[in-house]
Length: 351
Ligand code: NAD
Ligand code: TYD
Image (cartoon, rainbow, N blue to C red; front, side):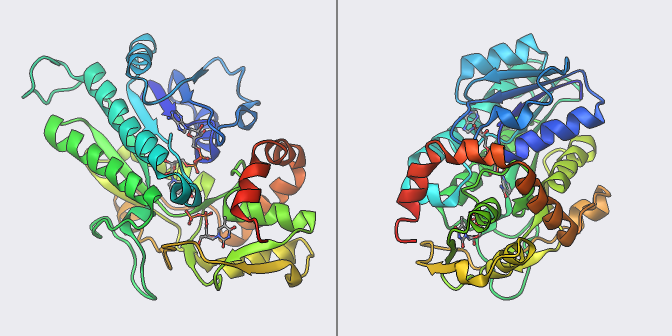
């Protein structure tokens, strides 16, 4: 790994990954390609913008000409694709953009990597690539669908996505699989559970609830709030991706999770308790259509085969995360004072 192309690096997980990689080093340049949609925020990266190893490019992963130019200009040998539409609720109201960005965008990026890295691009049978190249697709446990009360997702669990978001991520994964199997492109797919931590856009459960609790506003819990997610600190997700870049076997899928299953209601209560607020702020609202009941990741493969393990306990991670949002009110205010107001009014009109 010498020159990395990180896509979607101005979003939540991508910006945490850029921070982690610049702290760790071991490469020459990191190019962050991000379209700066509503979810992209350069404030997440203000402290690294002058780092000489770091380059930001505003652009779209569906722009094939731009991709060809970036691969050539920066001699890219490693791609980590975070760029995506990432919010389930938005995929219910606007599915098409999820297909376009998540599926067509991924295919465009795969094609650019194949074109740049294949030793003999004119030969359709050739499976030889420059040594050391790697395409890593950042995917999600949501591609596996929903679990009942027991069981966990392994890498061989059949794909059974339920939302337009997870269907688009599963489709992108299948395209990565096809580029590996048909063209021999060196690829990995990682499938991580729900992330929490700094710089998360406040449409997602944890930052939304922290903000509303602090502001003394209602906390909208979908349905009975007993849906279970398997939470992982974003830095642990990023360290797992770095591990897969370093040691992942080409063509393999790696699930990432930290064995932290929690019901949504438990998380909301924990946030209220930590902030010294009362549970009367909780408002049960109409459930999300097609809401997956439970996710849980079996992380045996990445822990035993690649030696990765999470560093954060849930208690420590949540305490630090709540404090981060308390000490970064200006970051939050800037986001929620803009277009976010319209989204919130539309989404939570009866709350
Ligand atoms: P996010 O919505 O915070 O960030 C997405 C970023 O992608 C933004 O900076 C946005 O501007 C950029 N982007 C969107 N469309 C683009 C395009 N066409 N071209 C270039 N950039 C574009 O998302 P996130 O929560 O950081 O998730 C990152 C990735 O991780 C996604 O692929 C998501 O599916 C996956 N993932 C997320 C979670 C989670 O809990 N958040 C868990 C597992 C996997
Ligand atoms: P979210 O952060 O949107 O992640 P995902 O849907 O990808 O798991 O939601 C996490 C859980 O919290 C999910 O079960 C939906 C629930 N939720 C609420 O109950 N209220 C809310 O306002 C939001 C945003 C989510």
